[in-house]
Image (tube, rainbow, N blue to C red; front, top):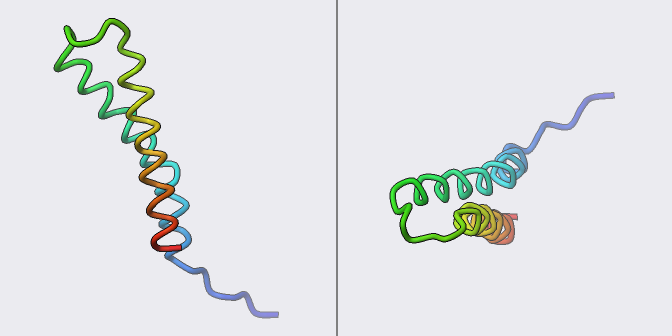
Length: 65
């Protein structure tokens, strides 16, 4: 029985689902390090970046999937 070929689009969307929240959190860390006086609690920026990355991944999956 032959295997069906893998769909590369699904692989990219799966990777984006993990990569974009991590990238958002990393950008939140970078923002906190640059603008360290703007935040009382920097966890909000890091968590907010991760949530925005998750939202971006969901939108990307909806548009392409």
